[in-house]
Image (cartoon, rainbow, N blue to C red; front, side):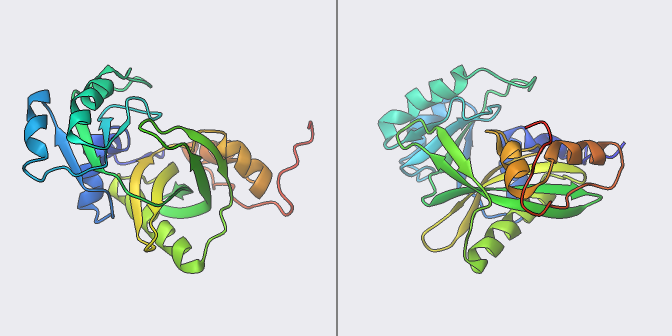
Length: 238
C-alpha cells in the first residue's frame, strides 16, 4: 500500500529526530539544542548554547504537553522536569531527551497539505490563535488565512521543504510555522497527519474538501479527491 519513507517517517513523531531531519533538509527552523541529561543544563547558558526566552519541550511529546517558555536560567530545571513528566501519547516510544529551542517571535500559522506519489498540494494556510504565558495553549484556528503573496509563498515553500525532509510520499501533513515581523518564515514542527483542533472540519466548511476521504483515497491507492466545491461544504444531513 502507498506509504512514506520507513527510514525517515519516525522524524515526524520524534522531535529530536525531526530537528535533525529539518536541518539536513535546509528548512529554516529555530536554533535547537538537544539535552540528554539534567546535569548538562547549568553549562548551557554560560557557553552560549541557549538564549532567552527559549522553548523547552520533550523529544517524545505531542499536543503541547510538557512545553514551557523559559525566560531565564532559573527556569531551565523546572522546565526540564515538566518536559520529562509529560505523558507519552499515541503509542510513541519513550525518549528521555529534551529540546531547548530559540523562541521565535511572530504570527503563528499552519499549512495543511496532501501528498500523493511525491506530489504535494497545499490545501490552505491556517491562522493559529494562542495564549501567551509560559504554557501556550491554542485557542482557535481560522482558514484560509489571507496573506500577501510573498508571505504566502514563504510559508508554502518552507512547508514543502519540511514535507520532503521527513520523507512524506503519501498522506496528509500539518506544518506549524511562525511568520516574523521581517517576513522570515520558520518551521516549528511538522506532523504526518491532518491538523487537530477541528481543522479538518473547518476545511470541510470553508473549502468544500473532505480531508478524511482524501486520506483514505491515498491509503487505498486511489486518486486523491481534493477539488474544492464552490460555495463551501454543505453536508446533506445538516
